[in-house]
Length: 73
Ligand SMILES: [Zn+2]
Image 1 (cartoon, rainbow, N blue to C red):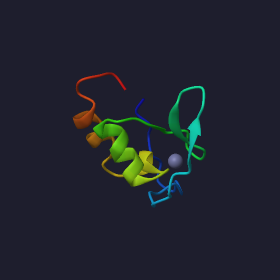
Image 2 (image 1 turned 180 degrees about the horizontal axis):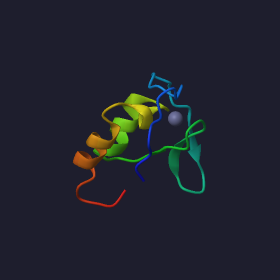
Image 3 (image 1 turned 90 degrees about the vertical axis):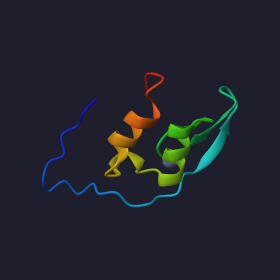
């Protein structure tokens, strides 16, 4: 799951607000942009807070490691 970031890659982190809608099948809030499912756990709250580009956040992998120690992501 580790992605190499090439120099010159234009993907840099910036805050993009999620666009949540209620997925009636899952009964959960799902983001229409990035597909993030809003769960009640710290990892997911962090992703919600950081917006749609949370995966590009510099501390994403570190934070996920810390917050998801107890379960597989
Ligand atoms: Zn999103």
